[in-house]
Length: 608
Image 1 (cartoon, rainbow, N blue to C red):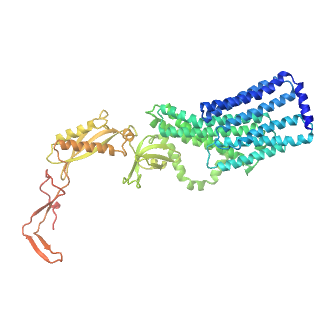
Image 2 (image 1 turned 180 degrees about the horizontal axis):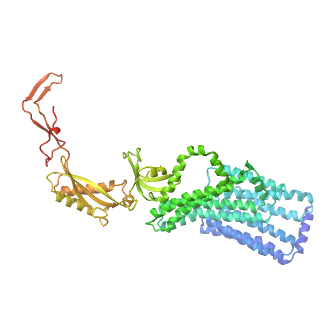
Image 3 (image 1 turned 90 degrees about the vertical axis):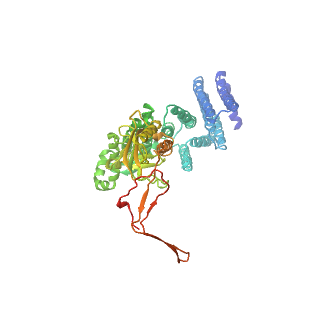
C-alpha cells in the first residue's frame, strides 16, 4: 500500500510542468529562509519582543499575499488545492511565531502548534494521494483535530496579551471549553471551517499585535505627547488609562467578529439569541441581549471618559481648569444618561416599557430614590447655573481630617469633579471629599472664585501704646508690598487702626491675593505659608523699628488687709505676716516695658 502511494505521487509529480513544480517547491524554501533571516536579525540587533513580533507578522502577510498571487499561476486543480493548504499553513505558522515571540509562557506548548500545523499539512497530502477509503475516513478527523490542537496554544498566547489577572483562570477555562466544543462541532460536521477561518485568525493576530504595541510603547509615546501639551498629570493618566480600555474593547470586538463572520459560528449565535431569560408580550430579554447591552455600555462609558478629558485640549492651559472642567462635567453627566438609554434600548427596555413600570413602582421609587434623584437633578442645576464650577474654591461646614489633627470646623478645597450624584472636593491636605450635589443647592456655600479668583486677606497686629501709629502703618504697608502673594496691581494694600485694646493698639493689614496661586504654591496648607511669611517678616521689621508687641496684662487690687501664714511641714504655724494697709499686687506673665493703662475700673478689681 505504501509502495502504491509513492508510485501515485511520483507519477503525479512527473505530470506537472516545470513552472508549477518550481512554484510549489520554491515557496516553502523562501518562507523558511525568511523566518531564519528575521530570527538572525532580531538576535543580532537585540530587538524588543514587540518589534520582533511585528517583523514576523509582516513576513506572514507578505507571504500570504505572495501565495495568493502564485496560486493563480498554477493550473493543475490538485496542485492548486495543495498549494493553497500549504501557504495557508505556513502563514498560520508565521503568525504563531509572531504571537509566541511576545508571550512569556507557553514554551512547551509552542511545539503543539508547530507540529500540529505541519502534521495537518502532511495528512492533507496523504488524503489526496491515497486510494484507501478507510484510511481517508480516519485521516480527515485526525487533520481536524491536529488543526484544533495547533490553534489552542495561539489562543492562549493571545489571551496573555489581555491585562486581566483576576479572572485569568476562568478565562483560560472558558477558552479551553469553547475550543473543545468548537472542535467537537467541527468533527461532527455541525460547523465548517474554510479559508476564511485562516484569514480571520490572521486578522485577530495582527490586531492583537497592534494592541500589544499600543499598551506598551504607544502609551509611552502618547504620554510624552500629552505632557508637551501641558495636560495635568491626573487628566493625562486617566486619559491614557481609558484609551487602553478602549483598545481592549476594540480587541474583544475584533475577536467576536472573527469568531462569528470568519468561522461560520452564526448558527451558534442564533441559538444564543434564542435563550430568553424574560419572555413576555411586552419585554423579551435574552442572554445575548444582556451581553451586548453590557458591552455597549462599557464602550460608551469609556468613550465618554476619553471625550471629557480630550475636550480639555481645545482650551489654553490657563483655561482648562475653569472652562474645560465645567464642560467636562456636562459631557460626563449627559453622556452617562445617553449611555444608559442606549444600553436599555439594546436590552429591549424602551420608554414605552419603562414608564409604565415606573408608574407602577412610583410610590416605592418616590421614597427609596428620593435622595438619589435629588442629587442627580442638583448636579444638572449646578452645571447649568454655574454657581459652582470645576476649579472653584469653596468652603462649607464640616471637618476634613480629624485623623490628621485638623481641628477646623469648615471644609475648604478645590472642586475637582461634578459627577452624577456627588461633587468631589480636594482639600489642601490632599484629602478627597465627596459631597452630595443637593448640599450645594440647599445650603449656604462660600465660593471664593465665583466671579474672579482675587480675595482680600487680613492680618491683625497688636503693638504697645507707646508706638507711633503712622510708623506702624508704614512698616506694615512695606511688608505688604514685599509679599510675593500680594496682588497690589489689582487693589493697593491697606492698614487699618481698628481698636485700642486692653493692653495694645490693634492694626489690621489687608491686601489682595490670587487664591489659585496659593493653591499651586508648594507650601503644605492654605494660608499657613502666607500667614507664616507675613507674620515672620512683620515681627522682624517691627522689632528693628523698636516697636513692642505686648501681651495681655492684668492688675489685681486687694481691698482688705492681706494676711500670710507660713507653716511647717507638719502643719504647725511658723510665722504670720500681717499688713494692715491694702497693698497693690501686680501679676503678669513676664516683664513688660511699655505699660498699658495704669488705672483699672472697679469691675476689673478682685477681692481676696
